[in-house]
Image 1 (tube, protein in one colour):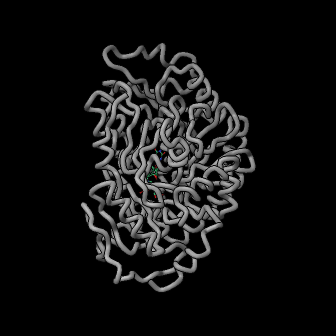
Image 2 (image 1 turned 90 degrees about the vertical axis):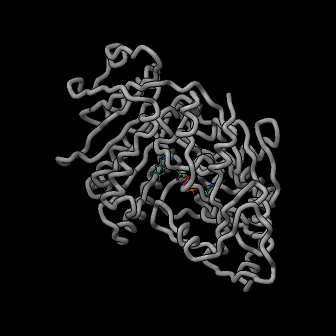
Image 3 (image 1 turned 30 degrees about the horizontal axis):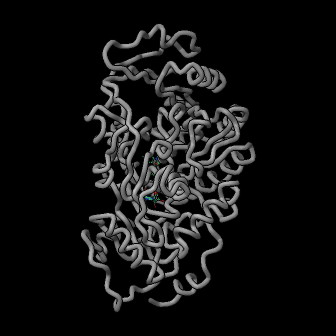
Length: 453
Ligand SMILES: Cc1cc2nc3c(=O)[nH]c(=O)nc-3n(C[C@H](O)[C@H](O)[C@H](O)COP(=O)(O)OP(=O)(O)OC[C@H]3O[C@@H](n4cnc5c(N)ncnc54)[C@H](O)[C@@H]3O)c2cc1C
């Protein structure tokens, strides 16, 4: 185990003091000066516009002021300053450094990394962080040793399984509800030098699922990720992207691929450096930036569905979509197996089965048309309800509105624990209002938000 604290601190956050929740605007109280900071507060339009949007390009919320923190103390002072004025505070991370690039050259890597390296460490810990090795190691937030956080009450606390365990549990995959992470110490494992990678192709869903189950049960590969993209000639393709990590002699393909039911003639295994494997979505990002689709709305929905229902639910959903249109040529449905016991962050909800599947609609529309995006957001809601009625759960990186009642159902037995942590660590509901999880926003705060600053 090894600390990468410095890297993570640099990655810490672009923290944003948002205007009051639910569209109530509050004028800044110019009589109350901002705190002295190591970093800076930016009130100018350029800085505020730069953080108003996100990759979804569906909701635009320009904040009142942007904090560029120079230290953990800056985050604490600004949260307190925001709270005293009835403002909310929402951390952002996406434009900051990534962990894979900084850790792999040291010969170490986190056991799990999300597929895309353009995400911040702390933004990913706030939601969970699913990657190719999640089936074995859980999500990124399961692999955190300790964190320095600033609570909604403005207190800086170091938490871990031993110290402030309740706070530690409620910050991991906690959607930024109780504290802002400013430093994280991550478990690391030896990084392999190379990766043997092959994309397996299947004639249909059933055969694909059968091999996915086999592959995670015998554990012959390190990463197992299923995808169902639209075929260029129409219809769908069923694929499983598998990777074996190694240093030294390459693995024997005959042993690795024995007994599988894919199209053996279509296999083209390759050996690539581990760093290139981690950065495997860089080419797609470049292509989407070049053709403009990176900047279109992205109405994604990400869920988990239990093994017992996966075949029926996915088959039904595939029958409902026009893949070329609803996913786009660069989009896909993700269908990757995960052992639920590997996931230990209490707030990341998975189905009550030994094995489940990440089931995600990664939509990359060819059009920026708002009507099309709205239609897909509505479709997401319907997908969620069907998944939920089949025992599935949400991975809350999804584009559709959720009511407090939806959240209560989503968190299930963990909801009361999260609400208690909110009362303890963010009693004024200062942090991350965008999820709208709690009904019981303190009454005095609602009135204060509505009053002119
Ligand atoms: C192209 C792309 C690829 C993706 N691939 C994956 C993937 O492979 N696996 C996966 O699991 N997810 C994936 N995601 C989803 C991604 O993990 C989440 O959107 C993640 O929250 C993004 O991190 P971010 O740095 O952009 O955070 P932001 O979008 O800035 O923030 C996300 C949430 O985290 C909160 N947050 C941010 N910083 C902090 C902090 N310091 N403390 C507390 N809360 C904080 C924010 O308030 C917000 O609620 C992908 C998203 C995109 C756009």
